Amino acid sequence: MPYSRSSGILLHPTSFPSRFGIGDLGTGAYRFIDFLQESNQQCWQVLPLGPTGYGNSPYMSYSAMAGNPLLISPEKLQSEGLLQEEDFANLAAFPTEKVDFQLVTETKIPLLNKACVNFKTKATPEQQQAFRDFCQSKAYWLDDYALFMALKDTQQSASWHTWEPEIAQRKPEAIEAAQQQLEQDIFYHKFTQYEFFRQWSQLKQYANERGIFIIGDIPIYVAHDSADVWANPEIFCLDEQTGEVELMAGVPPDYFSATGQLWGNPVYNWEKLQKQNFKWWVQRFAAMLDYVDIIRIDHFRGFAAFWGVPKGEETAINGSWIEAPGEELFETIKQQLGKLPVLAEDLGTITPDVEALRDKFEFPGMKVLQFAFGSDPANPYLPFNYPRNAVVYTGTHDNDTTIGWFNQASDWEKHNLWLYLGCISPDGIHWDLIRLALSSVANLAIIPLQDVLGLDSHARMNFPSKAEGNWEWRYHEHALVQDLAHKLKAITTLCGRAPQPR
Image (cartoon, rainbow, N blue to C red):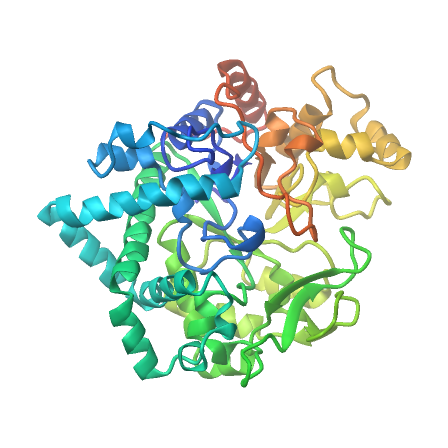
């Protein structure tokens, strides 16, 4: 794992070019890995890979452990004999610069259903055994997830807490009846998970063989309407009668929002988790390490203390800080899984207890250059204040692109940046910040692909607190030209971040 001096690219798989309207685990993904290798990058950072619901946010998934079926490559299904070229004859005219999630869903789900039917009738004995082995090894989350999704299909996607009480509360008789009644639908959801993880494992192997490590992302919270909460209601702060969220997650007012961010997820019942020896969290980390090399923990500060907002509030202003047993949790995970390859997202309101928790386990924290030039020399995001055990970004998925940020920056920030750099290079401000990140002392530097491509605000991935219109950006098929790879390679090598000869 390259906690030694190295660098990489931040890019979610949905952003790959593809003729199916959304990035997937097919040709575009492999070409991107080739670009990383050619440009001397050693890491690829993704956002959470789970199946998404309303708003298409990867941070609001139907499962903390499942994969998003929309990322399955139909072309790879074709190579297995599960689809034919004629199945792609009437594809929609998808936009090339963004994902139309509704159109993608209407196109890809019928293809996945057809592949599932063909798998039942055409799979070889070896494929059938591989499927059974997968279902058995993942049963601790897959059984609940597949039944949950099958039930949602019968409930017009209504949230689980509005279902009939017997099934919402998981009465054994109701669960057994649903399993029998929805057997075919359950098989479909297990099949799509099998295909997702099969395709992902092949891609990961391809990356690892080329010296590329994959950084995954664990959101601290899960969606209320998820298989995790439905199957494990006792470990979340819910109303026992209605199943509604009793105490909501969020953050207080900060850089991104004057009213804070009210996420709406249920916070954890940490007392119950402690009594279970954090079993669910251990399983979650183990599942994650099955398919990534390094884990970025989103909202790490919530493991020291979290912002809890009472039910009924419309903003996050009236929340309060509540302590969490983060040290006990990470000690338990370490004992069961070994030393964790973790990066800590420690942005926002960071207090000494958060820093102590991070440093106790030697987790690198995050530094964001877009935050560096708006205050004084004590600003922790200025490169001369970095420790080596850190990850520096030009910006994250929640920020504007570097060009978009610079175009809207205050005169004060621009003045400080000019003083710091000495001048703005002819290559553009995005290359100035890329160079600044790569030349810093931080062990790891991560650059969003939008900055490598020099794109403006139109390529922004997410606007925090904006419910719709996020997560849509895609790059063009011919964007990753050889000259760009060579330029990034030269700077990476000069800054001492190139892979060492094996």
